[in-house]
Amino acid sequence: MICESWKTKLDVYLDGEMPSEETRALDIHVHSCPSCAADVLGRVQMKRSIQAAGKRFAPTSEFRRRVRMSIAQKPHRSFGLTWTLAAALSLVVVASSLSTYMGIQRTRGEQAYSEIADQHVAALAGSSPVDVVSTDRHTVKPWFQGKIPFAFDLPELQNSDFSLLGGRMTYLGQTPGAHLIYAVRKHEISVFVFQEAALGRRWSDSFTAQKKLSFNVATWSQAGLRYFVIGDASAVDIDSLARLFKAAS
Image: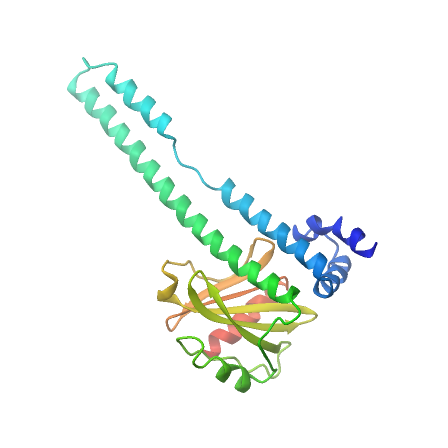
């Protein structure tokens, strides 16, 4: 019965429209209930798919055909007018290509953020969110040696509100990376680290946390590595942890 009452509120929870006290209570419940955690993951994935589909646009082949026919039906136009129409068609084709390219880039970016968000949710919903359990960065960092093809630094957390819970290996597409989990005020934050070149695409740095797909996210590139900090903690906390990582690197 408790799960049923919570499940009716999951959409409001994921949209960030639930009162803060209820949000905290549901956070605690989701982290301890595999059934509700699976429901959250399913709804998050569905929202990702809808958002990605809604932002794609490209002129159809039928639209291009009608433009070509409108030119072909009037062969006796003057050279100047024909050139103008040809130039207009060229602009349509260029705009179409640019729109398609930008749509693909947005979709790829959204898919990557979706994968990262799904990994964050799945890790916290699992019974063993980390493979190396330790609050000591000098234990967690060496654990990754030989498991991923790069090294990275972890920040010193003394005099901060954050605590390290541990880490695990992860993949974004076929690219191996590190997944670290931190806690702050009953919230968990995931930090993902990958080799920038291995990801095979350009990213726009957003060092100040942005709301993406129900989570606050900050991302930046430093020393050849791409960092993602993601969680349902406040944007201020996401920014603070990102600054600690940037200073450590």
